[in-house]
Image 1: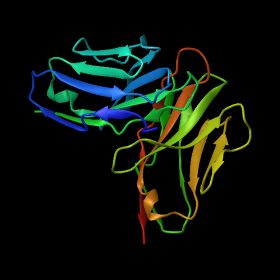
Image 2: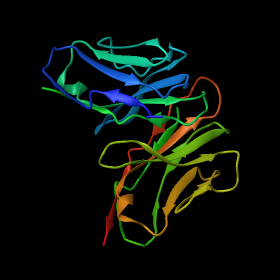
Image 3: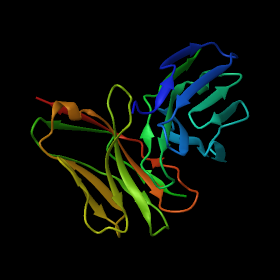
Image 4: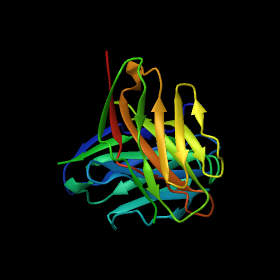
Amino acid sequence: DAGVIQSPRHEVTEMGQEVTLRCKPISGHDYLFWYRQTMMRGLELLIYFNNNVPIDDSGMPEDRFSAKMPNASFSTLKIQPSEPRDSAVYFCASSLVLAGLQFFGPGTRLTVL
Amino acid sequence: AQTVTQSQPEMSVQEAETVTLSCTYDTSESDYYLFWYKQPPSRQMILVIRQEAYKQQNATENRFSVNFQKAAKSFSLKISDSQLGDAAMYFCAYRSYTGTASKLTFGTGTRLQVTL
């Protein structure tokens, strides 16, 4: 298996633009997680899905952030409009079961100018 | 809410030596998981080792072992025979055992340097 796949690996955009980050979980994994890593706040969970349904989105910072999982093999995290403080590394992770090991993707480094 | 504290922002170890990274956590739960993740410069988050709180025996994975002290809420990582490839950020993480609270709570990380 190729592991968790994220795209793009790097994204540079200007303030106010829409940004879409993509994730393909490991096949067969029922849980998908989006994390954000910043110097100030470290690693924090934004949202997670079970069988394509959002379960806990309490970590989503504000309405500018939205996440979807239209099918078992694809999820997006969208920021609209983006702001410089959104600059971070965004990780996607997946696990087979709720209490299972979470496998992380390589991350997307987002820079908002 | 659970919190995870890593009090060592940076550590350094000579190749082939042993180093211990500290982690403490705060929780009111009795059952939970603890993890150590490694993040090399590639940014990939790699699971190093996992410990279930109900297990008294400390987890071991090759050169990596933990010292789990449940009463003290301490979970340190020992790396034996350190190698250059061990240089990375190391994150301690906590996760509830049951329920819908499946999120990982991470510490702030310890940057490990390995010198010749």
